Image (tube, rainbow, N blue to C red):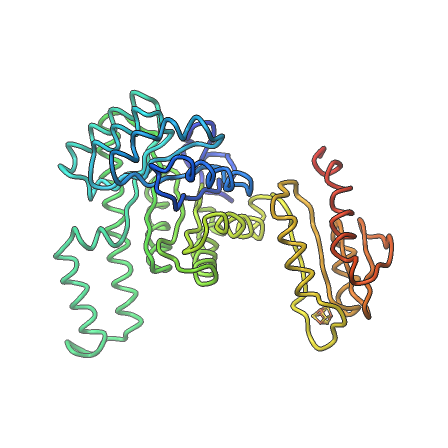
Length: 382
Ligand code: SF4
């Protein structure tokens, strides 16, 4: 069961309430380089990105946002730190949402309230982004407490179980993050502004999970899930999947970004795989392939990777299997919409559970792609 939240609107995309969990990403280009930024956003759109965020570190980046917005189809979000004038310009340029961490804005609440009034007037959304890192910087006293817990953990102060000390530290930090987010929401509500979504990010998976869970118990504003600075393709995907799955499986989370030290286009399939595994979204190819083993007599790894790459832009839900041998091949292939079960230098092609033909290994790719292409119109019509 999804957690019941308020629904907000980001451009033409609904988030929270009964809307599906929305997938988003962030560009890596210099935003002022409009051509490169728009090209990257087009590549993100092609693979299923539904909301895109761009960094706005300088006024040069803010003043081109209107130009970028005209050239893209998905809602545009301006990521702002420190300088409230950047947020004011982004709003003037017509962005669909601003992402603000009120804790690091110059002139704090005063400038935050100016941004809130402008967002309210333009009827656009705001993400209040609380990061564990900036909470630490803000709260010196809390830092001292953390140091004390650490000293206890290694026995310097007293003998404390290290796992227990880490849990206490995690809970304290999560609680401070949630309290900050609720305080900022209160500032918005005083101005009768409710078009708000919240993120509570930490690079430590369990701290983020703890903070999101605590927030979900105390507020019905929608939540943007993210594990910040998660890592490179493999480490980031795994950390994000672990953290987000713990939350999504509990019904918590209305939009998500998998952040990776990789091309942003790589983030989108990871996000959809998480959502598809939890049956929260059904988009594109659900792919099954075997890991190969000493029984294999075809290049299953090569074929599987090529099939997945060639089908990466398919948005229609379809189930495809590429299997190495007769042990599990026919079973998995029969359950898929299109399946390949390898044999000795050849393979059997299945379509909707029925064998359609046997092809030599050099024709595997073409045969699978052809069957998928022939089924797509039927699936699109569903
Ligand atoms: Fe090995 Fe066959 Fe299973 Fe693939 S399907 S992992 S080749 S036993």
